[in-house]
Image: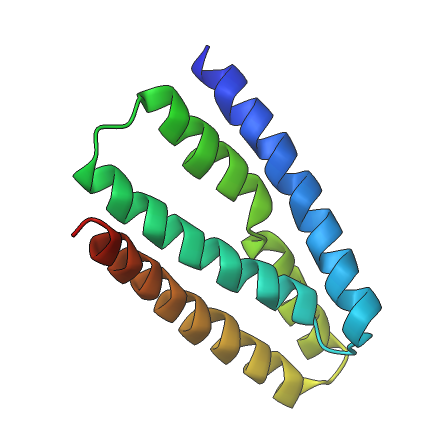
Length: 124
C-alpha cells in the first residue's frame, strides 16, 4: 500500500512540475532554465515547511509518503537541473552553468530553511 501512495503522489507531482515549467517558459521565454529553478525553489520551500510541520504534528505515514516522497519527489526536478547544468557546460556556456549551480543550490537551501521557519511560526 505504501507504494501506491508514493506512486499517486509522484504522478501528481510530475504532472504539476511539467505544467509549472511549461508555464514559466511560456511567460518568460528564458534561454536559462528558469522553470526548473522556480520548481526547485518552490519544492524546497514546501518540503521544508512540511518536514517542520510533520515534526510538530502527528501525521499518518501514508500522508508523509504521498506528500514528501511521492508528490515532492515527482515535483522537484533535481535530476533535470543536473542535466541542464551539464548541457550548459557542454554547450560552452560556463558562466550560465555556474550561475545555475549557484542559484539552485543557494536558493533552494535557503527556501528549505525558510519553509522550516514558516512551519515553526505557524505552530505558535
